[in-house]
Length: 259
Ligand SMILES: O=C(O)[C@H](O)C(=O)CO
Ligand SMILES: [Mg+2]
Image (cartoon, rainbow, N blue to C red; front, side):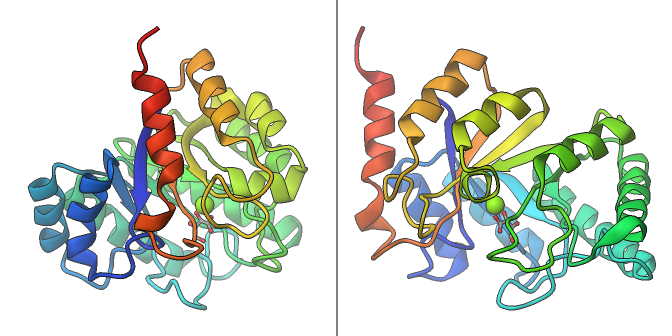
């Protein structure tokens, strides 16, 4: 069974951010991720993670705006300075939080210039922070119209082109289903490049056991493959966070059942 993390930007939002760490631990998660941890002083977040015994698995590079804000700048021509400034900030925060991965968002852009900008910015970032693990994540354009990185072949090509050991793929099952129509086949195709996974049901982006996706089959496939990374729950609870955690209990029970 993979190790499960809770996305504290989307789960346990019934309570203040600093209380969500302990709630996630109590619910059976082993780690957490926070998309934009820039509203609370990093040392406070780090203390909460230590107190709850929860590793911070991933943060996003700024912008620090989740609700309606831009979805990054890495592929946006003309905003290279902004990208670099934001990236430096995420490095400082990731260092305080001891965060394992930094997700770099491409932003809304298109065309050859956007492609060149994305590659150049990522190449710069991988050299600037050789110690940091960086990810890029294809995101579907129905939810985020105009998002540059909305294609797995493109992501594979860019990662291959940059060929940096600290750059890998973030696979989100909800986006993978929306983009390819077959989340499991997508996993099989991109597995060697994947260093972080996020899960949600599809359609709806609620709990992983809502909708059509076979997440138990994915968890088995991850074990068969020998996936060593985290699987993070990034969804909008259909009702309450606690009330929708049956999928986690079942995954843990399956894993601990004697043979
Ligand atoms: O939307 C997602 O799936 C991403 O993981 C993200 O980082 C925020 O847009
Ligand atoms: Mg995601």
